[in-house]
Length: 508
Image 1 (cartoon, rainbow, N blue to C red):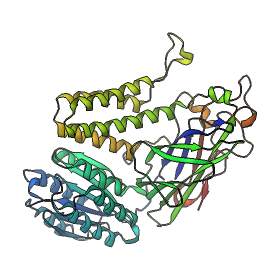
Image 2 (image 1 turned 180 degrees about the vertical axis):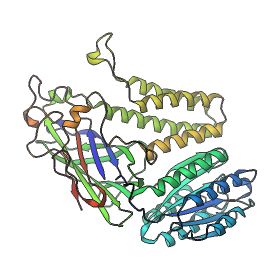
Image 3 (image 1 turned 90 degrees about the horizontal axis):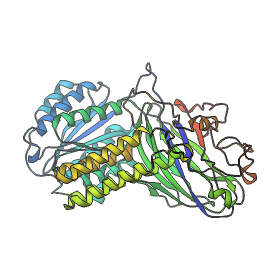
Image 4 (image 1 turned 90 degrees about the vertical axis):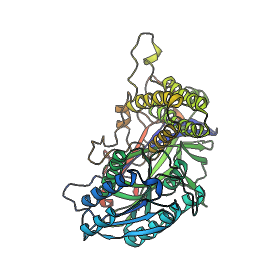
């Protein structure tokens, strides 16, 4: 498992409370081609209420038949359907008789109401039974609003969260334009999975196939990021829409779910630090995960160190542009969620305004020409910034004249996808190995330290000036200094790999 952290500032003013942002990158181990994968467990919970008629159920059936062919006989597959009540169509277990499973799937018919809670809870029971110690993935597919059984969003979120604590990750697929995106989003958040949206059968089939590919390529499961409390931390928060929770000991935890081979995700933390009189470690990042092959639990730890500078030098600090860009991107996801809520209220004008404001915010943070010189060529903006700006422009137009339900669901799915799976790539896609791009990327890579800055180390990208351990020639203390990249990694099986000669992160 690879873990890096990029600071916006590497030093804070001496003896003064301050805050820094930390862009965290987590990359899962790559699975070697000749490595035999362990059996996977996939439990599908499918809505078969009356609203699923008219081709929707047929489309889901076709996707599930294709999915069964993709799975190996040793994989566990189960199907629970629900309308007014839940029914186990295929008990979760090895796919030893695919012909029988195909017949059972093909025999589904749409009728009745929508007791989603019964289907979810029965599906969780099946997934826990079959997955046992190896865990499972539950895929909940529904096209409507829960109108029977438990309908409270928070209670259903808790059902999924309890399932996740027992090894079952939950992804939801909202089908059509009549489902409750907030409800399915709450279930996905609780289950540390994705909240997907498919308007038509072809899109639904593609998303179901994609989730199956992720499951079969899984190399890390039950991944979580923990930031323990400490005497130098006043507060820790997660920027954006990704859920987090606080433990009794004050630690902040983000549940990240499962990672497929080589998958890379990023999230942004805000650390409020107490006044420092000397350089020191202000926090530790701890990523814990289970190896799907051995079921061993592993933890990678990465210290976050800060230098100190005089107030005058602190006033001249230059924030790392990659970190600032991510802050603006996360604000854009919040704008999408709020715009989705506005569309559900019928406030088209308000939704468009939120999206246009977010787009302007992104444009205002585009890279400037070096030194602000007139006529100088600015650095190219990151591709993800350009993509988000274009999406915000397009969605702002949709809010004015488009179908309100379609726009609301598109906005919700977009922000959920970015927040939960930021940086996710399809299995087999090219990975950049955790390297940072950008105008200062070379210097950042020279500054890798594997587990935070080494004792007494100073160099490009670290704190400068007397308080921070020395400055470069021709530069005042802290002047123009940016944050540094701190990096560590751990490979499959927990064998530490040295990172450019630096010590590996701590492992347990």
